[in-house]
Length: 247
Ligand code: ADE
Image (tube, rainbow, N blue to C red):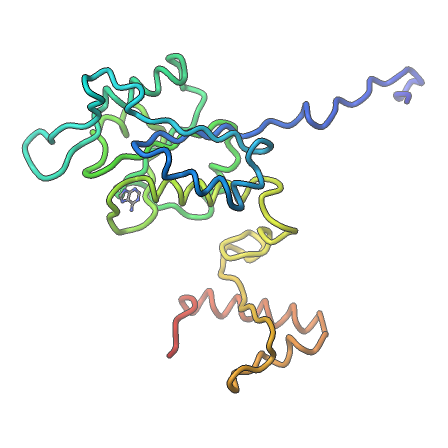
């Protein structure tokens, strides 16, 4: 192999050297709750290649006695609050005191609403950390001083941040190369290919069931018409507020 002046060109480095897996750390009080996810797509497809997933328990790092991690809220009120010193101790131990190179996301109903744009951003990070809490959530200082982002998965309150962390984990993992079969992640709801809109309807066999027919165009074999129909359906669905149950 020769370069422009006839001189030998250095061989391109193997692709593996150009590639860096995303390191994704989840801090939680129930690490085992995540184990089912590792056995199924999309996680199972990217673990050990595109994704280095690590699950950490705050309890393993707490500086307090008897594995204490939370405390009663100042000013009174129901529920327990995850202590800032406990979260700090966990980050300090895992990152040897420096996590300035990481995106650290605290899951909280008071955070920025998760959408596909944020998912794409997070999926592009090389190092991502998810912090989940139980009960009344984090001491406010976690979001202000330890996290780079506070993220909510929707305007409702769950009993803890584990399900939200799983939602983020799934949404991010399926954007990593090799997570999905074929190109199923390219044209889907909220994707750039659909201008952020909703996906067109899907049908499969049988072509008719109890008188409910699949639209003729989809059975026509005319790919041009099918494309046009799908674009139109996607447009109408996006501007009309989405799919609703109609029974
Ligand atoms: N913790 C509890 N509810 C939550 C929500 N909706 N989003 C993120 N974290 C949460």
